[in-house]
Image 1 (tube, rainbow, N blue to C red):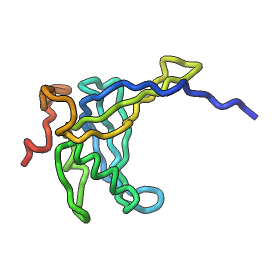
Image 2 (cartoon, one colour):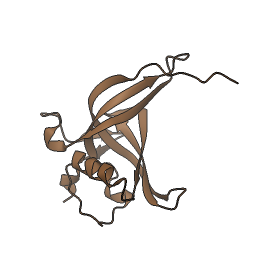
Image 3 (tube, rainbow, N blue to C red):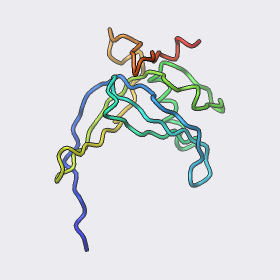
Length: 141
């Protein structure tokens, strides 16, 4: 039996600004509607995180936390589409796993979404990525 690759213990990266760089409406293998997102940490495009919002009762807590991180409230049963979150900015605690045998192989992930009002203060709410400005969802309202 082949030995499984081991990851080093997780490392806490810290509270980071997260930008939704890509969002696509899809259907999960089990038939549930979902949004697949590619998230950028701060303005760096070299560390993209893939995150999923699956629209099931069991996953509703994650969707609420995600929208709180964007500074937006949602209601039960509200229809959400990928276009509603594209280029939005939120805040999260980020962690990283480093491959034991290839230390350059790092997997970044969301540890916890943070409500916008409790996230870092004094951070510019708009950033420029690839020549375009990403804004908070409150700027769209």
